Length: 91
Image (tube, rainbow, N blue to C red; front, side, top):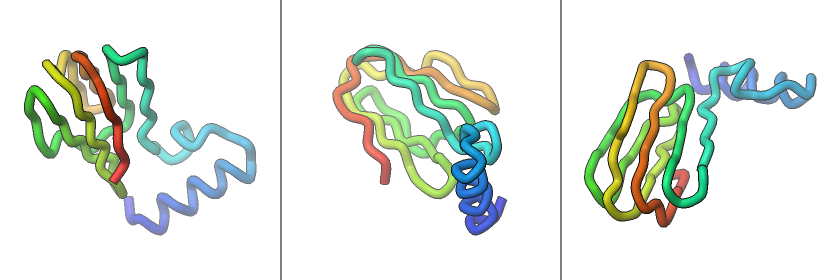
């Protein structure tokens, strides 16, 4: 989906008070404590290691840092990262 179209769908969702992830397929992150991160609507893994995992969110990259990180599950729709998560950054 072109970047401009994505932004239009996000703005439409805001105007209609709808969840952006449901309308535009915008990535949704859920951090459960410091041990588990779930992400829906990802666009793939860009880098993978025990201390850092980079995930494509389409127009940005989600950088997960920590210790003993592990990609526990992944489908074309969502993924699950476990370990000792110390930082989640959007770049």
